[in-house]
Image: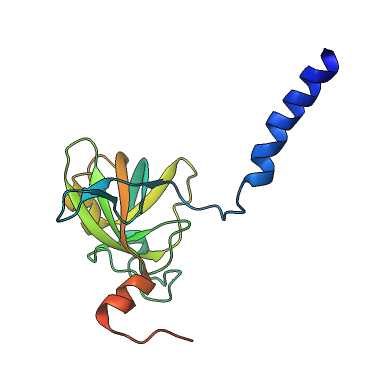
Length: 158
């Protein structure tokens, strides 16, 4: 009887690992159903979402080179993120007051591991966190650089 239970348990744990697909580690996704013209629900295009703490940076870095190579301008709607591709457009929503802003990723950061994004001064001001310094936010990727190039008709690299 023990042998039967052991074999059954071993098989139960082995089968899922054998059938699992080899997937890259992607950020968490959320699919929401949409209805088409006939009324049948379809899965919409998946998008990326992240919730955590945001901070901002400004005068001390004004004019210095960012990770993308451009000069930092604290009055642009830009941000620093550790993993998102440079040029990605991200909607940042302040969870405390519901205000949101769309920023372009042009730098790497933040330095503090407890934070998920560093915003330019202007983006922080729009969100209402320039006085608070750190606030809980939700990030949603609106477009990655490749998607923006395809939408604008720019030919892609081979």
